[in-house]
Length: 65
Image (cartoon, rainbow, N blue to C red; front, side, top):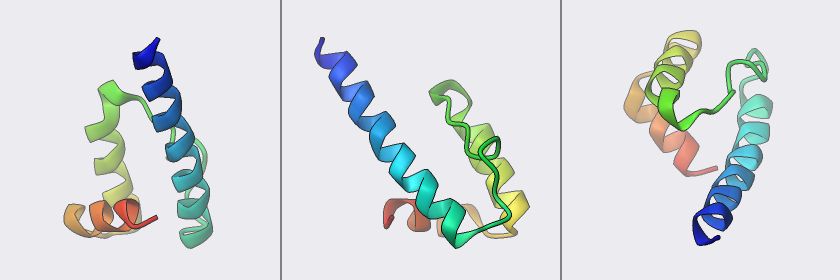
């Protein structure tokens, strides 16, 4: 039960961050931001490439949303 609540909270937070990222970077699509914990590294690498920004900068952007 607690794990489910934690997962739901994390998903809700990601949905809010996703909306902000799409506003900040209009060329991002829902598919670009489709989050899967198992493929998180791949998703972030794809975002770095698409946005032409270094991983550390992307991490900071996401954390500050």
